[in-house]
Image (tube, rainbow, N blue to C red; front, side, top):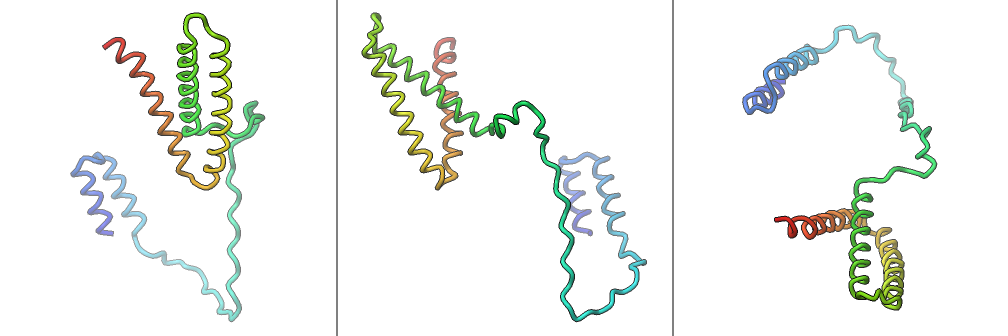
Length: 164
């Protein structure tokens, strides 16, 4: 236990923990390592058979499903949120591009073609990513990175270039 007390002293010297916290840790170590218990009870009889199986742990309580949002399924993770945000920015940028290409007259043919390309592109992208996501967990990280980069790019384009 000297190693534990030495580590506590090093933490205190380096400033990771303060004096009262170090004191509580030292007291905890001292009370947990006072030695073996003297009353260990009667010895178990030796049996040639196999040891009994341990009792299973009680089930851990999970989150309550009593809220209205439980109807819609599990919550959205941070990675999914940034992925959705990134895709929203990409679709918004594509829509702005199509509108800019359509010009002042807002040519319906160009706008319709841009919407068609968007729909077909997102369907193909969904099919490709669905196949890839089932084989590689790296795409969750890639979606997170794309979402963050798209957010940073939009902030840079809209605010940094304009106001600084």
